[in-house]
Image (cartoon, helix red, strand yellow):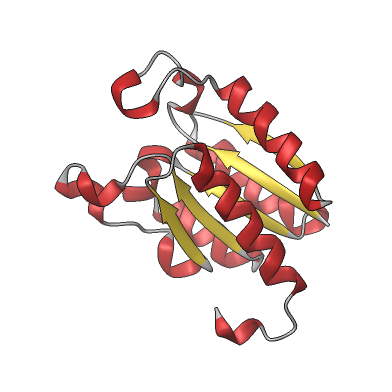
Length: 150
């Protein structure tokens, strides 16, 4: 089983960006921890980060041929990108939307997600554990014959 983990806009700034919200963990640290966790789950992951909406869309499109599922933190694109939403819907792979912070405790404009309606679920507010929970959810979904519970 192979899962694509996508990090969107500004996620490359982890460790420097708003440490009171995101802590000191860098994107490289996050990826390292996710690779270790994926090993525990017995799945392969590939990570990808881009600040460019079109590159994220292209990566989602290419996932159709090579991946079984997606974990995505689109960053601010969560609240603005119909294109990323449509790409997730188009590839028809189970996707979990994740956020390190609780988007519902933040600014009002962050309370709306274009991605949530085309994802199997959304996890926010648990730091790196949001990613781990999202990854586990996608793996469990793929292993579950009764997918209609989601």
